Length: 151
Image 1: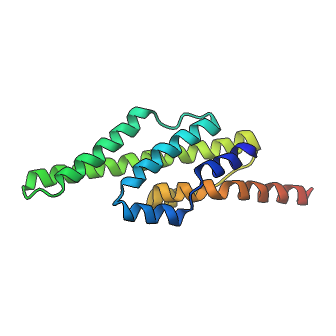
Image 2 (image 1 turned 60 degrees about the vertical axis):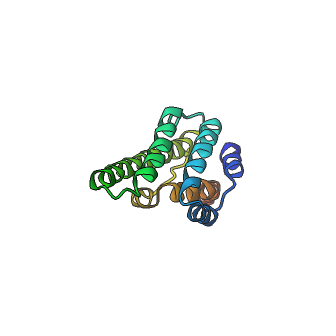
Image 3 (image 1 turned 120 degrees about the vertical axis):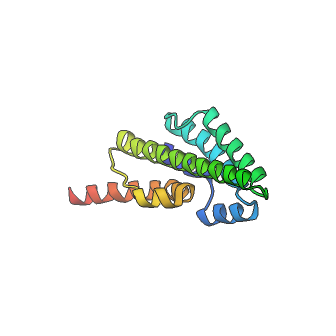
């Protein structure tokens, strides 16, 4: 349990704080949070979620989508939309890879099944991942207590 507790303490971010920082920084904090949290997850779980090039591509897509978004030219605005959709896809890929890593750690190290909702992962991406990182130690303890009570 110590790795999961350590991950929660290392991330140390409430979901409402993450949402607020995202709004205040117009989405820039999302990238900062993803970059730092990915490194923390990889360090605590030993599972490589994504590589640094993946995170760099996310940052570049975010920057170029912002640059092209204010254009009055149709083709440039269309390019901005295409880049934004690519960024959204990268967010989804990241969220599902982290979801898989968290579930794998719960199963392998703690012999517990940690269910994460696929729809919530798709809709809320990093916010749901943050919620699950905060919730994981409590859920694993609850499952362990339920198993001990049934014995």
